[in-house]
Length: 339
Ligand code: GLN
Image 1 (cartoon, rainbow, N blue to C red):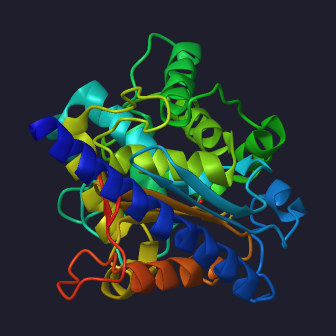
Image 2: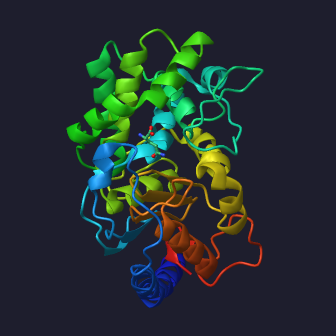
């Protein structure tokens, strides 16, 4: 009896999935169509190699915690992950050093400043948070390994767990940033001065530039975001990518700091933990439900993808994804699908 009741509710569930899932795909298709002609913004050029990207590239992917992936547009082309990497490196540093120690080195306060501002907290001398460059460089310097190769391999293996395949560093972008990244170098020196980063600055910077130059596509980003939505487990491979204890730390700093000096407005309007990168990616995490990724290299003045912000805003409104939206939206995703 119990068994047949379960079967019945399973059938109802799967009908709901059939009836609602196509509407998500259609909505993504519509969004892609609506925004592909939006040409506002400019591609990043302060890392010379990034300026070579095709500005028309545009894709949207959603991966659910059940491992379903919905995608539209240019979801296959690879690009460098840039600042979105900060989220995942923070998770690895937390695993390596523990929350208490990481907090002694990197704060969790939003800055209201640009991602590349050369500032530290006046009292504690810590970088403000791990989502801006200074904090991210300090974070990466905490990743353990007996030498540079082992640290890089551990970082690459972390990406593999989140994505489900091996990844590589784009050498042109890495060397391009390494030879021009003097602002980041200045931040590292400032932190060395205050004892917030240990001795080997060039090694820490190299690892940071390498972490930013890892190649991913939009679909990969959606699956990575979905792993954060899914207690740290990659929903496609079932592999634990990061210790579930640290998910709340990661998502909290994404929520308050992930979109830089747009973080407050993003939290107010869109209401989902998110992170952007200067190559044009944005990830957003709806805990227990899904990961969203958008890729479009045209950026606004704060370094966030113009189309990416628009798409996330529409998705949040349409499906009631804002964390504090008590009124609810038109679609809810549950562990077992849609209802
Ligand atoms: N690698 C870039 C930098 O350090 C990342 C910045 C970003 O994506 N916002 O400047």
